Image (cartoon, helix red, strand yellow):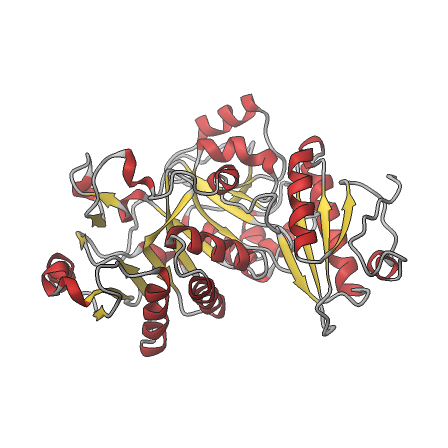
Length: 443
């Protein structure tokens, strides 16, 4: 990033970064403004921090292994790192050394995923400006004694709450559909942001972090990759409502699937279509009773402190673990879904392959050109689905998923020259009635 007036960058980071070839959406720009106010002014990664001051380091190019180590060594708990091209796996190594704080999803206006993190979450200096409501539900068969500690802890902290008993089939636990329906009812009943927790938890402090961050959705990731449905935050935004609705629809369609996987799939679907502002809750929101350091936790869960509590399904989406650790969608999923104004059920999947061997800038430029081309002329397609693939196996999986969805398939590489009427030409090709592949000559 060019050395510019820090105040100008902080006031309008969207325009400042656009001058450097970074295309951000409105919500992503707002998040960068929040980072600059919370941690410190936006600076280049090689700028030295001022004594006693924090900074928000904007990273446009992935560092080498040694560079990542050097950058990490300069960070303090007052610093944040923002990666506007967070969808690119070239940044994964650096992310693995940092604590992920949050992401802002993609949209036609901002076709990249903004990732932000740091050494560790700083302690909030102020209380939430307004309250959030805590909601929870439990089977009618377990009785009120099951929620005794939850209720008492909320009363002690003076937090508003709504706890209900839910009917379910005899001898069974509440399903993901039961929980999603309950949260949806609570979202309609109340007007404040909601924090859903399992009934067997206890609060030790007021949960101010999600509200301070002003996000749409917040969740904790077990072991860095597996989303836990035990603590879920939903803001009052349209994006938050979309996340809740999507979770509810998926849960009702697959009622027997583990709820952790369903919330993961809902997040993946929503963050690829709208600028969903997600916060990754720290372990203090998912502490286990009896483990070391639990006295400083915000929420304590009644789980056994063993590896077995990392999820009931040891085979959970192994292919998605690496992307989730890096806070992004994987090759099997669409990084970006753009819907056109044309009322058509036909979709086109663009596979951007060989990403691992290309520069982050070239990949980002191709993403932006593809998105702009589709918005300008969709060729009659109802939607564009864009997937990033580093290796041939990922390409095969993405192609298979696209064909199962009956999408037309295009494969390109970063930096490849594309015709201005790419999608119109594709729609007019003789392979219109069956999945086809388009390979333009590389520039």
